[in-house]
Image 1 (cartoon, rainbow, N blue to C red):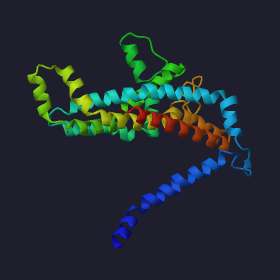
Image 2 (cartoon, rainbow, N blue to C red; image 1 turned 90 degrees about the horizontal axis):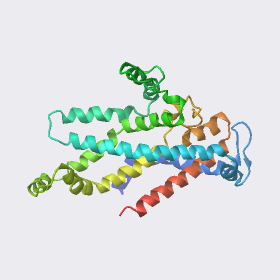
Image 3 (cartoon, rainbow, N blue to C red; image 1 turned 180 degrees about the vertical axis):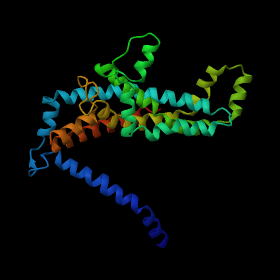
Image 4 (cartoon, one colour; image 1 turned 90 degrees about the vertical axis):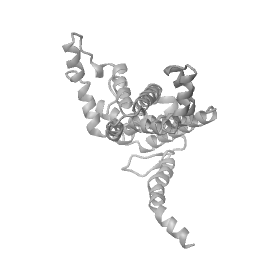
Length: 283
């Protein structure tokens, strides 16, 4: 009993935090999704009206969902491809491998910050470094934030730049593969490409699955880069209107807390369904 008490005391900060900041807010959010609430007046019960309006009378809901799916379908594969490629390079014996791991992981720590999003916006701005470089080599500047496609592309590139966490997970899997496998493949005459598809790729499939699920969920929740780069508007022409940004607009710009709560629960259902599909097709 004393051991159990000690154990529960040690995990109590997590349990308290989980209940206070996840379970209770989720319950309140579910309750508010059936109400009309603007933070200033008493919540008014309206049943499923918020959900009905979202699916029938809200074109921005469909637009934000489309933008988010485009982002997820491009950012997640690109990030994982870069992460795996860099992990395989770092996995080679080198006295600087530890330094490389730290340097490549730093963007993942900083990637969600406001400062990095501002830096990224300035980097791809009309007079930013990228356009300055294009001008110097004789090419026309690209106005990234004036077209929905190129504006969303900058968010995808920012996500790909934050590959450090996935890289470390891949690297841990690669280090568990015995060198005997590669030596046997070389004796059999397998080249580097054949070795990749025959040894590390099959062995890493559980890790790839984990990274795909985790990064997909994280990508659906992307907010800060979209907010900073578009100044909170989702511009140009709602091309960067991520789903989480639209929820923020409805909640804190329009003071439609009940409506935003309904949007949040729809997103939760979407992520649960997608995750379920991943697990159902994992074999």
